[in-house]
Image (cartoon, helix red, strand yellow):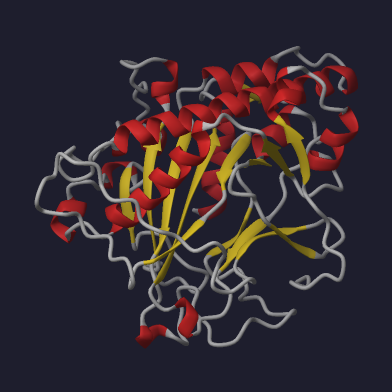
Length: 372
């Protein structure tokens, strides 16, 4: 296990949205961002002006959502989709085998990217991919669906441009690469999945327990510093990530006003930085060091997944990463963390390994078997 405190941590590659639109991202930058010795992450700056407002609005919605009455949250779950549509809480297993109750997730299929009335085709073998979306009522969370869909659309639009840049590189470096293939996969997918994450504030009674709570920061050689989200690699093509926000829910309780549900929900103030600077996203670099990556609030980050690694024949690599909660002290009591991840997953019939002819459906079976 590498160290959390590398002396000179590597920095993620940053490109502008305009560079992506103009096809002017240097191949060297793509290699540094996604190549075999990379951190597997690219940050995109200079996004549309509406991005910051959408990010803030959706991420504070996560606190309101997670604090809905339990009986209302129950109506937003989908057991038939293995809780990967709508609300999911306490269904994910931790490394110890116990259920993770510290974070809740809200899953949304992004087939709406293909058109307002488009619905995802059924897939009995993969109900997690194909389940219809479940939305809170407008009287509960006014504007939630509209905001969610608008932000995800912006993220997928940007992912398409990143995919186009990857295609340019692949066409120049991979023999018989199908021009424009990754852009096609990302742009036409019916199975892109978004996950809105809410990490609940730690309870005083759990100051030294599981679920990402520890009194002292983990030692450099500890296997427990992937406490909020265990070390893993993504399985899709590109994962779009927003910067997280931290909300002091003790000071600003996310309770929906009962007076007039037709009015927009009050915006929740958020902290300018995490209570513990050690909290956040970490990446296992190829040299065995562990690097903390900070995403600026006005930027998006895109991480590589296994499908991208297969499509590019290993030119671009999926990289293990995790989220650390940092230490739990008085400064973290009452503070929640909210974030959004958008996983651009290919349609089931798309080929991800041309040499073997493997489709994403076949690859997904293999992924499921790893955990089965």
